Length: 289
Ligand SMILES: Cc1cc2nc3c(=O)[nH]c(=O)nc-3n(C[C@H](O)[C@H](O)[C@H](O)COP(=O)(O)OP(=O)(O)OC[C@H]3O[C@@H](n4cnc5c(N)ncnc54)[C@H](O)[C@@H]3O)c2cc1C
View 1 (tube, rainbow, N blue to C red):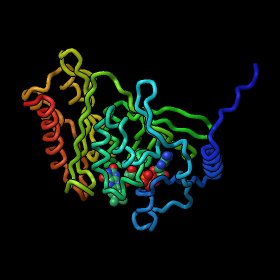
View 2 (cartoon, protein in one colour; view 1 turned 120 degrees about the vertical axis):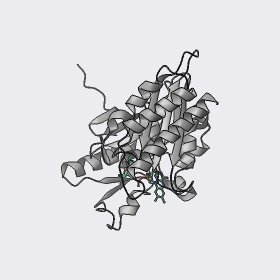
View 3 (cartoon, rainbow, N blue to C red; view 1 turned 180 degrees about the vertical axis):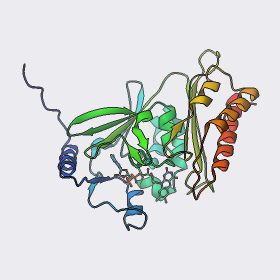
View 4 (cartoon, rainbow, N blue to C red; view 1 turned 90 degrees about the vertical axis):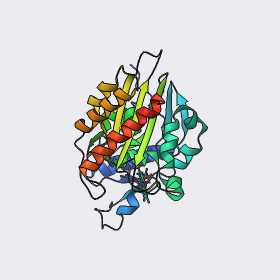
């Protein structure tokens, strides 16, 4: 059998893969830097150990771009929040991501900060992450050993931990676009702008033929060490219509299901109560009552 032809990689991506692999095998991994809005906060060493060596992604064009591919909206890892806000494609096919991008930092942050950085950083308060979970998004990662697609539900493995290996980059985030799906997003912070989330929520469902909701996904950030799905509350909403009775029942189920973290930003009680209220409000809006 003839040997497989080598995959043609754009120059800068190929070099990046080589550098990452060499550094990882030497036991001194390179830390990729995209917008630097998370990394530069750590650079003084006061908050956590600063990176010893970084790999600048700013010239890797293969990580850019927004496109529709095979029924999915595909965003390159280096897509900034400003690009998301200005994208006609995102606005048309996943407007909730535009809404979310508008709540992240202020204009200076939105101009530099990237979707891939939010995902790789894996902060429980990362505002895009509940949207990834609620939409069954996948993360395309790649390195010298090849490319692989990781579901958002398996990507966040622990507090600020991901399925990404030290020799891999995030290349793209892919959002499937099933027919009839709706997605809502809500973020609660101390103020409307420049605030880290105390609770962030994304709710997705399909309503085809008026037979009740299907494929319900409820995802939350800032309430646990990782972004999470609320499976018991999803089960309450599956097959239901967003009536006042269903909203009461679902909000109660969510309050029972969550075991929120306590930290400097909020108490567990606050997070539980607010999560339930936010869900109730989203259901009221969906039901139009
Ligand atoms: C003032 C301020 C306000 C902020 N407000 C918000 C907010 O409201 N909501 C919110 O969610 N976040 C907020 N952030 C955090 C930050 O802006 C986001 O998490 C942002 O998306 C990070 O993207 P970046 O490109 O700057 O990441 P970087 O700082 O460049 O990188 C972050 C991490 O991701 C890794 N990384 C980056 N790109 C890749 C890649 N392609 N492949 C593999 N690893 C990669 C880096 O190695 C690093 O570990 C704020 C930050 C600041 C400073």
